Length: 391
Image 1 (cartoon, one colour):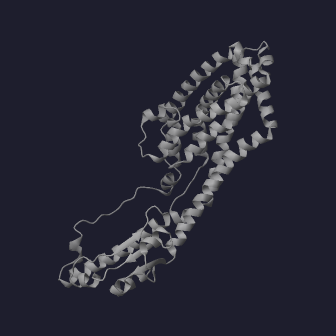
Image 2 (cartoon, helix red, strand yellow):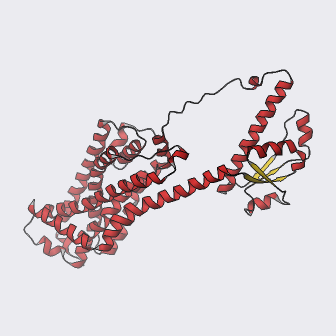
Image 3 (spheres, helix red, strand yellow):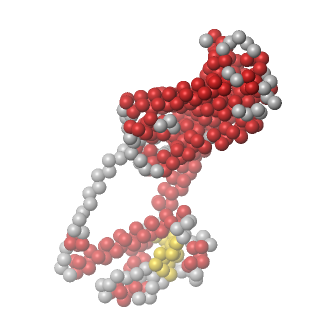
């Protein structure tokens, strides 16, 4: 194994000399992505919280037909604005997020005890318009419920008669588990980081050396080919695992900048989370390194290998993105599927749940078997003399 260790040190040393690669591997991916992601969340959350605390500006058409309603909505936080000539056009042109229109027969229907209709004009495709409409609709429902209760009292009936069922909500979520909804895409960054972290080295140690014609002198050494491959894979795995570790550290730190006290969510990525994720990711790192080296072995130039590996990137990306948005219940068989098992483990740990040792063992063992198969295929390719020929 001395030859494998020598090749490992050679590849690590050469890759560290490439400052651009080191910067992209250890800074751009694991540090910039979490920073941008959390900054976006921080901006959106603060913007929505600030809007919720301010009065809601709403142009009102026909305010004179329901002065009591307008006064009640003002007390709820609505800022009544003067009427506009064409509410539909104003909403489409984003001059107003939502417009309240009260018909002339509102008071007549209300006094008769009949349902009185009002119109909310908004554009659901506009983010601000939709949130403002929901807020105004909540105000109107509150006023409607109060009016219904007064009508029942006026008829000598208890307001409770209109609510035959009272729902008592018992939310079983925790601040940590609620954060799992907001950060459901977190495993995607870890898995993609493992892929990108070793991609440059996997390309350079195979397709790059093949293009520079330095692979043939290396194969001319009496060292077994599998040891040469082991050294290259070891260096690739080291950089890949380091990227994952830095990504975890970055998210654990930037999560403290979120206004967790206002949104009721907490993102805690402690030592237990870090160790469990690294254990689950280790065989996946080897699997991805083997796949990247295998694909790069079929490329005759660095650029050609980049093209192939860019397409290969979609393989781990598709299941991670799907599982980030689709609801699912963790089953034992999920841990036996590479990438899916790691995704499930990270999501459960992120929610503050414990992962059973059997599930974690299945995840590690099944991915390790897949990694051994891929590495064996790659070793077989490495025994070919055509691999050292660049043309």
